[in-house]
Length: 286
Image 1 (cartoon, rainbow, N blue to C red):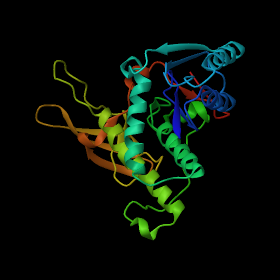
Image 2: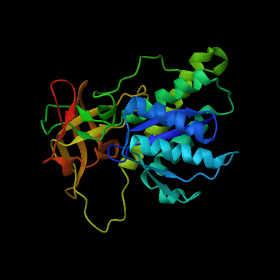
Image 3: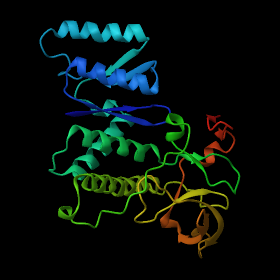
C-alpha cells in the first residue's frame, strides 16, 4: 500500500491517507476522503506521476480526474515527474516523514488497521508542533499549532506507558504499534528541534534571547504530542555580552537552561504586531 500526504501551503498542516494502489481511482478515493474531512481546496499542487492512469483505459481515468476537478472547482497544478525539487516545502515534509516512518517500521508487517492507526497518530504528532505564540501576554504559555486550523484546538494524545526501552518479545501487537509511534516521535522531534537551532554562516548578527520570548525547551523522553513551552523571564549574558543562559517559566515551574537547549519559536518576533488570537468558541482568528 501507499501513503498520500496532503500539505496545507498556508499553515503547513498535514493530512495522511492510506492508498491501496497507484491507479487514478485509488487517488480519487483518497481525495474524496480528504475533501469530506477537511473541505474542498481551491488548488492542488502535485507531481505528475507517470504511473497514475497508466493502466488500461487511461484516457477514461484522465477524463474522470478532470471531471472531478471541474465539478468541485479544483485547479490542478502539476510539477514535472521525478522532480521533487520543484515541490519545495511539501516535498521537504514528504522526505522527512518517509525517512522516519521507514526506519520506525523496520521489517515488521502491519495490517491495514494497524497502518491506519499509526499514520493517524503520526499526523497528530506533526500537527501538534508549535508555530508561534497565540498572544504577546507574558503569562500566556499557549502556542499556535497546525492543529488549531484542523481541529480548532490544541491536539493531545491518549496517555501511554513509555515503551521504547522494552524488548519487542514482551509486548503485545498493539503495544508494539505504540512503541513504533514513540520511536517516530523521538526521531522526528530531535530533527525538528535541530532545524529550529540552525546557525548559518556568521555574515550578520542574530539577536539574542530577550525577556518575554517564547521558546521550546529541549527535554528528553517527553511523550508524543507533548511539548515543553515556556517564556523567558531572565537572561544571563556572558563576557561578550551575548546571552548564554536563560531562566524559563513553564507550566511546571521555572528552569534554568543554556541557550543551546532553547529553541525560539519561528517567526515569533515577526508576528508581534499581527497576533493570532483564540476566540471564545475555541476558533482561531487573525
